[in-house]
Image 1 (cartoon, rainbow, N blue to C red):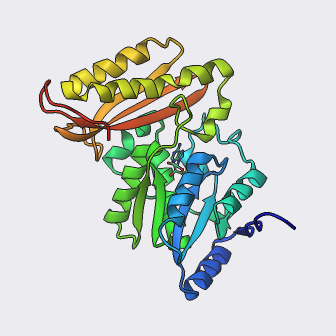
Image 2 (image 1 turned 90 degrees about the horizontal axis):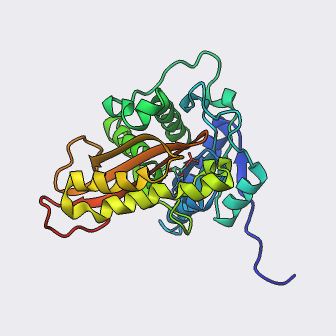
Image 3 (image 1 turned 30 degrees about the vertical axis):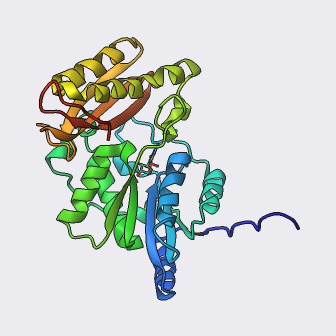
Length: 298
Ligand code: AMP
């Protein structure tokens, strides 16, 4: 045999009890646990989360969960058609040196009678939460359960889903989960479109149009020296050029997603539909106090 040795296959566990035992065995071996929760259909964005996890140290064992969580989908959303390419997903995990994959079924996560949920507070009803009622209660509930089941030292989440990242960070603080949340910058296609498992739904024409979201965010960030109104106007102009986009929101918030961004770090967030596909994106920027100061993209 020539060439590099094949990476070991990750071990796959389907029940909370099994993955719990496997994690405890790794811990007994002196490993720290780095956790990457996903819904599968893995792409380079997910792989980047795994790479960040690996870079946390040689003693780290990476655990990935793959679970399409019904609780975070609305009645008219894409739960049934959400892509589930399991073989490719396991290969992606193997390529990034993942030790364990947690692959529960719905009944493993929500046995008959399960009725307790985690509430996201006021922010959970804004932005994505206004477009998708109940979405963040579903997200926080499954993430809280996964945190208890996997008991990681550190967990990795993408800035792509910025509101989710903020809400999970807040849940960890507010409910005293003994772990650290690490944000990972958004991985993009060459034209700026944020990688997403949902991009496969886009027709070729809509795929070309989808990069408008990132162009608009860049235009907004480039206008940060002009203050909030200039940011929103610049981004809005780019979005208005693309008739096919059905806008859900374009909002400028502070870095914690408070509604009155002060000068300093801020976040510009956008959501729109192209056909039946819901796309979201965001960008960090440094808001200037007046129209004259220099601003940089964060
Ligand atoms: P999902 O499978 O869509 O639930 O995403 C699982 C994790 O991957 C979440 O923390 C996402 O924010 C993150 N993620 C998704 N897309 C990207 C991307 N393009 N860049 C970085 N992280 C991402």
